[in-house]
Image 1 (cartoon, rainbow, N blue to C red):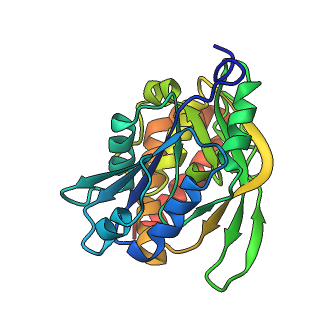
Image 2 (tube, rainbow, N blue to C red):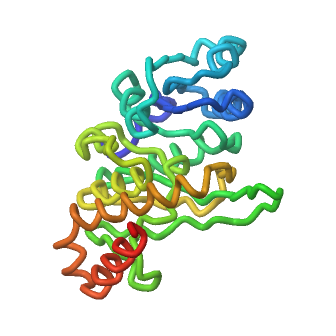
Length: 261
């Protein structure tokens, strides 16, 4: 198969949106998905054990493309996304975050890129607009992805770093081949997934900002989780990383030792 289907056929895109105690922001994120000009979609909101008014927010939105999945306890974004994918029906899968906003033509433009892509393209992705807490908006250019490489020689860091999961659409069978998200990670779980995907599939970059990425996560928790994730990435990909850059591995080992003190 070289594209999403014959002319006039729109394949179903399953959009997975995990959320936890973000009732105040969730409605905006949901509506930006349902307002897409690309109409052939289903939206699975995976409530990861929320204790606020999340269920009521979803219940007020009348759209038969919206499905609400309630988890009995909080297990983290990776587990919530995996549950959404398991329940999805689409040939393609995309991800939204509960505090972010999609521009109206996001899906249409990414699926149009898939329509002309070859079978080696597993992921299509865009740039983003980063919206900071103080209201500033800056252009976030997503990285260039080269199949088979883990590191970006110029940035001297992981090639997929800076590629947001909310900027992507991927073929479902590629996601399933990669094994989904690592549920032990609470940071960089999307980076880890991309590193597995890029071993086998090509990524296609649509150079336009199609998602608003809103800053809202807690800094202290993020730093602790990032340290653990960077240690995991070294354990999992250490040999391949050392082949590409022994200096990078030495530097990452020093960073992990320091941040764990």
